[in-house]
Image (cartoon, rainbow, N blue to C red; front, side):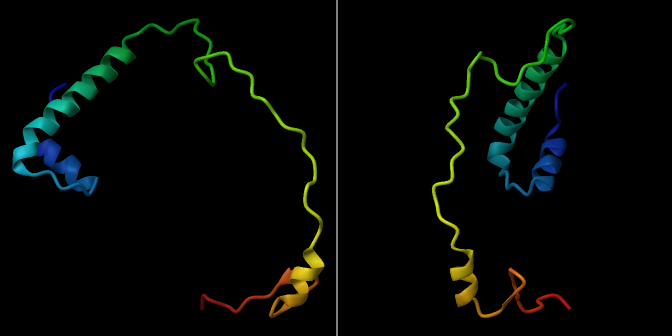
Amino acid sequence: MSLSNEQVNRLARLARLAVSDEALDITRIQLDGILALIARMEAVDTTGVTPMSHPQELAARLRADEVVETDRRAAFQAIAPQAEAGLYLVPKVIE
C-alpha cells in the first residue's frame, strides 16, 4: 500500500504534527515502509504459535512483601486542615 501526499498531510493533521513540504516525501516513504513491514508481519502464518508475554524466558525476581514503614495516619490526620472519620475533607471544586 502506498500513501499519497494528501493522505500523509491528513495523517499529520490528525496527529497534530507539522510536516513541511520538504519533509513530506521523506515522511511518505517512511510511512510506506512501516505499512509494508506490517503487511509482511500479517502474512506470517502463526497457527499453532502460543502467545507469550515476553520473547525471552525470564523469571522475575520478586522481593518479600514486607511492611517497612510505620502507620502514621493519625499524625497526618492531626495536622490536616479538615479530617473526619479517617478521611480528608477538601473544598468542592466542581459546581
